[in-house]
Length: 91
Image 1 (cartoon, rainbow, N blue to C red):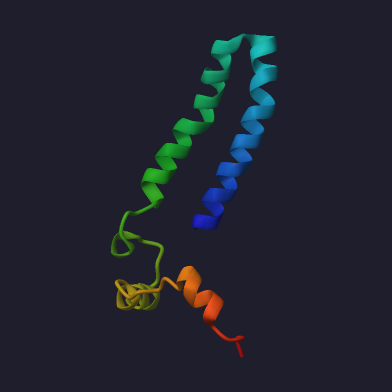
Image 2: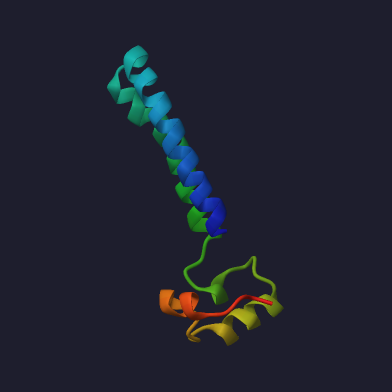
């Protein structure tokens, strides 16, 4: 989910930068905000409906995956740069 949201963010930035100049030139600068709101307001509604702050509140996570996430929460998963440099080759 995070990958999709970051990809969408990057695509949105590129498209907005490309189109906002054209919109401002042909329709006037206020229309940049009006037309972008057509996309951003529904996006915010969908985000609020489908994204949860906590895995236990997410409706899309299967029970076995939720159990795994809850079991692994709180464990130190940070490898740290020192551990990466001193670790031997993966097998």
